[in-house]
Length: 82
Image (cartoon, rainbow, N blue to C red):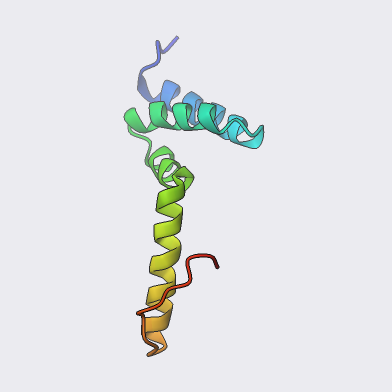
């Protein structure tokens, strides 16, 4: 038994979080990814960011701005809905 510490626990929390995500248990998923992230899992840390709706919106807006900048278009209006 790992007692909730170490690499085995980190892997177990990550796997359980992924199962909970597939089952639609977003809160349980976040909680387990948080435990795995606290144990050092970079994958779990990334998943926590992606599960954050504010981060998803920010990433979408940033991607649109970068696309417009690369195309030489003005970036004063960003469509946050799509």
